[in-house]
Amino acid sequence: MLQNTKVCFIGSGAMGGAMIAGLTKKELIRPADITASDPYPAQLEKLAATYQVNTTSNNREAVKDKDIIVLSIKPQSLGEVGAELRGQLPSKALVLSIIAGAPIAKISQLLHHYSVVRVMPNTPALVSKAMSVWTATDEVSEHQRNQVKTILATLGEELYVDHEDYLDMATALSGTGPAYVFMFMEAMIDAGVHMGFSRRISEQLVLQTIEGSVAFARDSQRHPAELRNMVTSPGGTTAEALYQLEKGGFRTVLSKAIWAAYQKSRYLGGLKNNG
Ligand SMILES: NC(=O)c1ccc[n+]([C@@H]2O[C@H](COP(=O)([O-])OP(=O)(O)OC[C@H]3O[C@@H](n4cnc5c(N)ncnc54)[C@H](OP(=O)(O)O)[C@@H]3O)[C@@H](O)[C@H]2O)c1
Image 1 (cartoon, protein in one colour):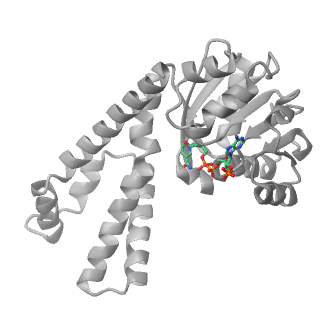
Image 2 (cartoon, rainbow, N blue to C red; image 1 turned 120 degrees about the vertical axis):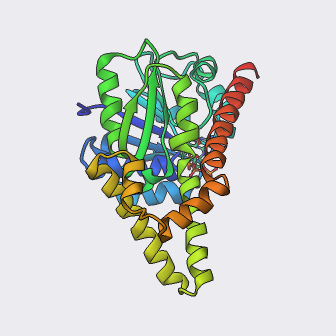
Image 3 (tube, rainbow, N blue to C red; image 1 turned 60 degrees about the vertical axis):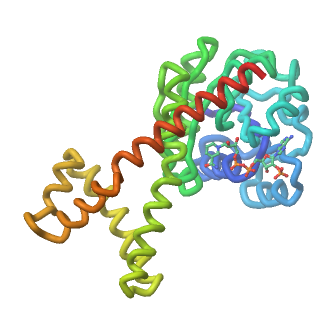
């Protein structure tokens, strides 16, 4: 699928580096066909030494003769990189952007290039457990879509959606999701410490509980409410804890938080469209 495909990464930090690691470890693309571009020399040296990929600090040099151009820079660098690369991309190249909150229209307008895939990954990509949601413009061929699937699968799970609106929803749910889970995790660990567990033991109990619950939910394929009922005996400890969670508005607060993140994502995307 990706044999003889030449790929470059514009921005080779945490996410770009994770994708390079996945592609080379799974031997999907020869290191000689991968170019990492970044202004930070130490990062380039590390990538060259670890994965034997080509490196450059010149973005125009990096995109020459490439089939896939991954934009893995921070959103604030997009304007500068867009101006630098406008009119420089091979006409048949695919642009794959993982830049949070950058709409396809903005990317196309900056680069004057219309074969674009936009992806919303999340931080578990750094341990190959990402949830990446992506969409593509009509100009992206079937072959290129399959290539995108293969590339994103190196980061974890991927899901294609047929409209960019879903990217805003995914931003609020799976993109931002790890932050909600980390806060939940932190609160549980602190509660364990409050009762008298050492922090180390409390962390072990909480992390394994969360990991085990996810595995159980996946494996059993039952509705979460059913799984919750299984451990809720009448008048018992779980019922008491769940009563306090409901009383404190746990469900409503979470729902409002996700809705707020969705609205913010739409607002920021719209602002960028206009500006
Ligand atoms: N991390 C995540 O989980 C996550 C999730 C969803 C989406 N994303 C998106 O992924 C993108 C990359 O995130 P990241 O966490 O990998 O950020 P990062 O580690 O900061 O990587 C970005 C890299 O781009 C480099 N860079 C800056 N200006 C550049 C330029 N003009 N040309 C080429 N490279 C340039 C930076 O170098 P310097 O450090 O020297 O500036 C840095 O090494 C962001 O747009 C983010 O929104 C990330």
